Length: 279
Ligand SMILES: Cc1ncc(COP(=O)(O)O)c(C=O)c1O
Image 1 (cartoon, helix red, strand yellow):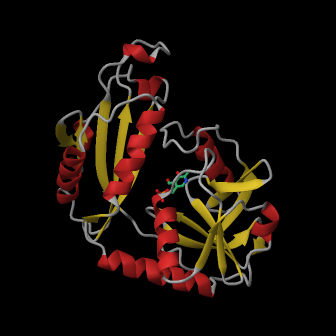
Image 2 (image 1 turned 90 degrees about the vertical axis):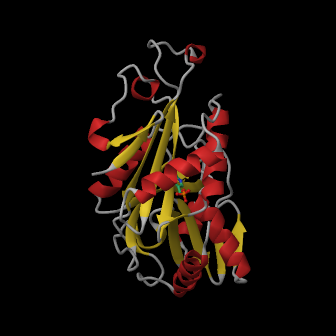
């Protein structure tokens, strides 16, 4: 039985429900986070809560809970599951109002959280991705629950036997539909800089830190599609997928067409960091 948190209560998932006039349902008016738990430890809690604060602020919302209250909820959800590796999902919507765009009608957000086991697919031999125009909105730095473009993009990727779509906007790579992108040329790693069209990925930021600690040159710089197609290696990152090598881009091999040596190194350093991590 999965236990979830909804508006102050812990309940079995099957008993948790929200009002149909919740603005999350009628407008997609809310934000979310996905926080990984590795070996039963919540990973990069502070960073995820900071990003949550940023998303809420951008939508003129206050955080309904303190950091300690969040930690307490997450700990209870994690404890309720036996899985070593879990993925905590949290969602805050602007709450229940009549169906009117006016946000001043809302005075009580809906807060939901659950933790599910991470079912690890072994992607270490590399995945296939497609490229696609970035069809999302202009505020991709907000982790908004309104994910229809990403849902469509992932479906387009799937239709072509791929796992992710790498997005191109105004002649530059932004990110994946639900991941950040790194490319490798020679011994240098490149990743697009954070801006309105790139989510501030927690795994992205951590990987940049880890690369720097291990003296691997990583540049946050605009990346053009030509560089992507000419890359020796491509990686995509996210909290639950971690660092995944891309071996096929639009049906063409990336580099030699198999997992590259820089990925082996970076992934090794990342896994070591995880092992030593304590909240
Ligand atoms: C659009 C987008 N970019 C990047 C990421 C990766 O972010 P993180 O490493 O914090 O999971 C995600 C994760 O879901 C995402 O949806």
